[in-house]
Length: 160
Length: 143
Image: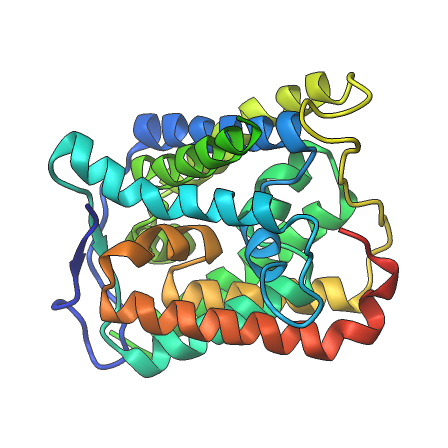
């Protein structure tokens, strides 16, 4: 399972903990994500963009034709952590802020922004770049840049 | 049978996120913290994914149709408009603040950490809000 650690948090909600550089597991994990995207494209001709898949299940204008595919994919996604924990007995550590206001704001911006910009890390960052889509390359560059600026401000200006 | 492939794809995607470290918000924030405790691991996640997806998509699209469906649903737009850039910029700010994007947030949901619950609820609300505001503009986009 994912073990959530919420204790080591300052008032802003950022962390100063270093994380281990994991090139091999990250590369292999990334390849599994890529394989999943290829399976979805080969079987149903759909882009494995999580924001798109999730938002199409939501009102208004629910994509009724794609509903069963979207729901089964999301169910699979939800099963991943329990299956992981069942197979390996214990999980990886996930450190998340305990600042609920910050997380609420973060979620709102992620949801709003990904729908407005037609994609997120998976849809633009993985699938779009793989198709050499100009829109996705621009979008990925943009969210990487604002992400870096945000963390810089959060950690080195306001925060710790 | 054909829903089994979708279920398996979702499961594999989630396992990939957990194994790669992408489901750990701390690691994501460290990836974005170029001027601090930088951890470049997530570049390898994206690189690994593209390494499989780019040739994979190329092979798949040599077929005229997917295995269990009549057409490929691929984005056709090529124009770079203000909505795309604004949306991506807003998304990046949220990603930096929380260290979570939609995939890892959904994967993390079953263990119901309070922070994840708040994040996902807000994310779904943000998506609905964006769909309402963007509705008149989205008529040309078929998914």
